[in-house]
Amino acid sequence: MTIAAVLIVGVLVLQLAGALYMAWRASTDTRNASVDVAQVVADAYAQRAGTLARPAAQSATDIASSVAGGTLTLDDTDEVLAALHGYVAAHPPFQTIAVFTPDHEVLGILKTSDGLRVEAIDADGTPSAWLVDDALERTGSVPAPERPAGPPVWLEDARAAVGEGPTWHHVVREDGSSQAVVSVAVPREGDGAPVVAVVALDSAALNAQLDDGTDTAAASAFLLDPDRAIVAGPADPSMFHDPPLEAATDGSSVGFADGEVVVERPLDIEGGPSWAVHVQVSPAAIVPGIAALPRQMLMYTGIVVVVAGSVGLGLWLLRRPLLQTVVRASTDQLTGLANRHELNRRGQTMLDAASKRPSDIAVVTIDLDHFKSVNDEMGHDAGDTVLRACGHALTLHSGERDLVARLGGDEFAVVRWLELGADPDAIVETLRAQVERDIRALVPDASRVGVSAGFTTAALAGSYRIGELLTAADEALMGGRRDGKGTTYSAPATNPLLAEGATLDA
Image 1 (cartoon, rainbow, N blue to C red):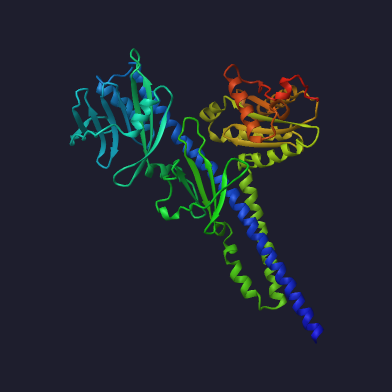
Image 2 (tube, rainbow, N blue to C red):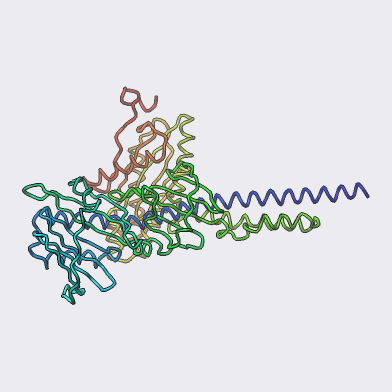
C-alpha cells in the first residue's frame, strides 16, 4: 500500500509539475505575444499620428510662405480668411489656424462651441472678433480677445527658428484641456522679418482620430511629449502606467507594470514633434484564461491525477490561440508577408548570422511607381490586387532563405543572402525587373505601375544593423527617384575598409 501511495503521489506531482510548467509557458508566450501586439498597435498609432502631424506642419508652412511672399496680404481679410478656412474645412482635427505678421498683425480662425470665430489684431494693436458661417458670412459679433501680456512660448520659438521648419509644442490651457501646436516662421521677402503661421490640434480631436479602429479593451495608446506629459490618449489619466523600460533592438523600449505590457517608441515623423508613442497591452484581455491560472493551480493541488492531467491538457490547448496571435502580430494581413516589426527581428537575425561567416547580405527597399493612380482611377480593390501581386512576385523571385516584408502602403523590403563575389547591382536589378514584369502580367490594368528599388549591402555599408541598412537603402531609393523612376539605385559605399582599397571578396 505504501508503494501504491508513493506511485500515486509521484504521478500527481509529475502531473502538477507539468501543469505548472505549461502555465509558465503559456504566461511567457502570452507576454511575448502581448509585446508583438503592442508593437503592431504602436506602428498603427504612429502612422495615424503622422497623417495628422504632416498636414498640420505643411498647412502652417503654406500659409506662412504665402503671406511672406506677398501672395496673401492681411489687407485683403476675405482672401486670407478663405485660405485659412480651406485648411480648417479640409482637416477636421484643426481647431485653430492663424497668421502673425512682423507688423504685429494677427488673423485667425478658431472652432468654438458657438461656431467659427474670427479673431484679428490690426497693425495699430486694435483687436476685434466675430462669428462666421461656413461661407464666411458674418453671423454675429463677440467680445474682442484680450491681448496677452507677452507672446506665447511657441510664437517666440518659431520666430527664433525662422526658416528652419516647423516647431512643435504641447500647450495646456487654463481649462485643463491641451493642444498640439505647430508653428512655422518664414522670412518675408524684402526685409527677412518672420511671418509666423500656427495650427493647433485639440487633444479631443487627436483622440478621435488616433483611436479610430483601436480595440481599447486590449490596448491603450498615448502620445507623450518630451516631459512625459500626455498629449493624447484615453480620457482617464489613471489608465496610464509608467514602469521602468528597457531598450529593445528595434529602437523601442519595453516594460511591465500592473499586469500590462508597455511598449514605447519615438514618433519619428519628418517635420513632426519629438513625441513618443506609449502603448499598453493587457495579456489577460488577449487570452482571458491566463488571468485565472494562479488560482486554478492552487485548487488543482488537492485534486486527483485525472484532474491534474486534464488541466495540463487544457493548458496545452491554450498554446494554439497564442501562436495564432503571434502570427497575426508578425504578418501583413493584405499580402501575407512579414510586417515591419518582423522584418526588423528576422532581418537582424540574418545579419548576425552573416557576420560570422563568409557571406554578405543585401537589404533592398521597393517602391511602386504611379501606384496612387491605380487607387484614384480604379479604386482601392484594384490597388490591393496590385499590392498582393507585388508581394507574390517578390516571394517568387527571392530565395528560400531570403526575407520579404511589406513596410506599409506601396513600400516593400527584401533581405537577401549574397555569395561573396556576387554582383549585387545585377541581382537587385534582375529582381526589380522580374517583379515589374509579373505585376503587369498578373494585373493588366496596372500597366502604368512601375517598380523602383534602392539597396545596400552589409559589406558596402560596413554595418550589420538592420535599421542602418534599411535607412541607407531607403535614402538611395528616395534620392534616385528624384532623377528617374523604374530602375535600381545603390547606396554609396561607406565601409572604411573599402575606402582603404580592400575588395568585397577580401
